[in-house]
Length: 613
Image (cartoon, rainbow, N blue to C red; front, side, top):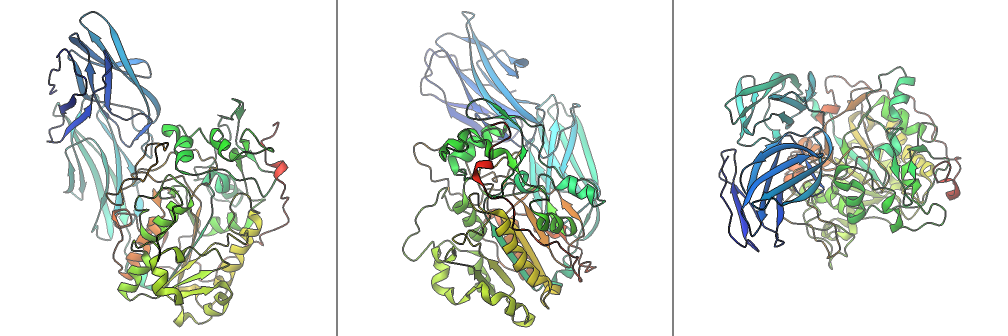
């Protein structure tokens, strides 16, 4: 351990530096609090989300008297102590929510402390045995694509000094710290052995391995059209939380991380509420803006959904219980069967912890370039390059279908050059009959002003029926055999989801444009889980992916297929979705029968509350 003693009479305003204990040159630094005595915890941050264990704890003290010891408690249990006035160490954490307490002792015997609530959120439960590596992603015997997303957690009582990724005996990545969340590029198609190897400060070496198979993109040329249709404001638990039991009813395994029916959250009056089945196909709105979203996440507790309902006052459901409702196959039979026959994922996320506009910026540009709210675009529109600009540069054809006056593209400078590439949805069915003239990339805009976008406040069955009509026209057309159709949603809408937000690559160096009252946050996490269905003759049937992705993976798929340059670091490092496909077999060349989506469900706001409220 390297510590620099700080025992001067006054440390007010001092910048605190500590060399790390893991052998690299970077130093932790932060400004100490002026209160005397006090503890300043530099890392982890309050209400933060840590991706891997052990977690680095860096803290300093301010005291007139000599500080003789610093202690670290996890959930009120002492786990570490050092006879110094500062601490820089690593502590193992199990997956879940924790309270980190750093306490100082001075020469007078006084104690003083700082509490830091946080969450440990690797995408899998870590092995609790010391000196073990848990490979969270990819899973054993997984079929993966390149770039390969590798996430691993380390459990060790000592600081981890290095971590390596080894493929088929060759080291391809090395990190001097104890975290691992990387993308491995240029992995050849075929079978491989992936090893994650770690070494700690005592010199102990330990590892874990998984066998994987990397898919080839060779057959991707069979796909000549990628179509993506993005609806509004639904969380995965809200729409597909009951998909697992439906899979079982169809003779398939329940491999869905669905809504936990025994979860207990508290409404604005402190009353317990469990997830419940809506008795109405329309409910009042909730707020998914930057502040409300961060409060919903609550440092990884995922328990603030009803608390933030006061942002959209309701006389029908004043305590916000509607945030806990869900739908099932009786409400959305078309979607449930579509996801069952084709492919879906229970680890697909919106791109940013905010509302529609910021997420649709990511959907078009791979970044919101700082924006976290629906800011007004400048004259001529946003000038940030979009996927449509890069398609133009690569000579790839595209079209943007709109259903009503709710088109989003006119807010971008792209529109000023390419307005002719917008077309009404009325042209869709006829265009599908001429496959040779159909553009390579197609975006279908949601019908917000018409109330068909499935946004809370609108009738979800009418919106789902609209999607079914559009998709059924593709399934019955000559263009089906060469197409991929992706249906997803732009963000969670303030509706409950129990899975903590995923760690993601920052798109660029642009910080969130926050106002004085805004919650702190960065762009290194995705938003909430959202539903997705991938539909194509080349999709693996009945497939459920557990790979962590966000909306920019759709951009990455387009870039991979049509050799288009990436937009930002986020989409350039995103998984390209090859996992969903088997290009050696067009399994669904003759698409399966799908049920009619009913539109006669009860739409009554007065039925939106949880039972008993």
